[in-house]
Image 1: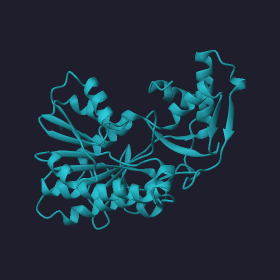
Image 2 (image 1 turned 30 degrees about the vertical axis):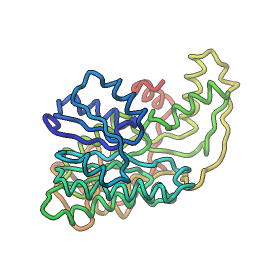
Image 3 (image 1 turned 120 degrees about the vertical axis):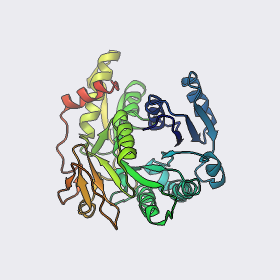
Length: 332
C-alpha cells in the first residue's frame, strides 16, 4: 500500500508515530515526512533512522495552517496523530485542547482537500465515547469533522476516516512505565481506583489497526479494534511482582495507594456507544461505525449487536494473562 507513496505523519515523534514510521518503511515509500513541533524529539528520531534517506523532518504545529499546507504538498496519505491527550492537562487548559485537537484537525482537513491528498486517517480515543472530560469532547468533535468532510470535499476525492484507540501499552506517559518508575523510586504505586477497568492495546495492534483502516476506509468511518480489558489493580500487582523479582525488592514493602479519580476521569471506558452500535458493522477483529448519512458495504461484515462496548461489561484478563501479554510486548 505504501510502496513509492509519499506519506505525512503528523505527530510522528510520539510512540505510536515512531512505530508507524517503522512499519511504513518496510514497504519502501518514496518519502515519509515527519511533522511535529519538538526539535529535540526530531533530532532523536533522525538519529534512530539515520540509515533511511527517504525521511524528512519538518518542524511545525497543527495549529499553523500555512505550514501544514506546505508540508502536505504532493502527499498521498496523511496520518494525523497530533493531540493533547492527557486528561488532567486538558481539563486545566481546555482551550489549548480545542486549538490542537479540534482546530488543528480542521486545519489538516482543509490542507488535505487543497492538496488533493488521497487518504487522511485520524487517531482518536475511547474517551470520545460519551465524553465526561475536555480531551474526550475534543476528540469526539475531531471525529465528527473527519466524518463530515466526506460530504464537503467536492471533487478532491480525499477519503477521511478515524481509528479509535483504547489505552496503548508502553507509550510515553502511559501507566506501565509510570508504575515501574514508582516501584523503583518511591517504593509504592499510586492508583486512582483499584477496580477501574481499561481497554488495553499493544503498540503493534495500534499500528496495524491504523494501517488496516487506511487500507479499507471508504470515507467517514470510525474503526474500533476489539481489545482486552484490564483491571488496574491486577496490572499494578503484576508490575510490582515483576519489578521486585528483577530488582531484589521485597514485594510486601511495595504499597498500592488509592488516590481517587482525577477531574474528568471515568471508572470504566467505552469504545462504542449503544447509539453508535446501531450504525456499526462487525468484522472479525474490529467494529466499523458508519458515517451518519450512509451505509458502506464491507465484505465479511455483519451487523453489530446493539449495545455499548464498555470495559464494565467485558470480561477482564486474569493476572497470568496480563503477565503473558506484557512479556509478549516486551514491557516486562
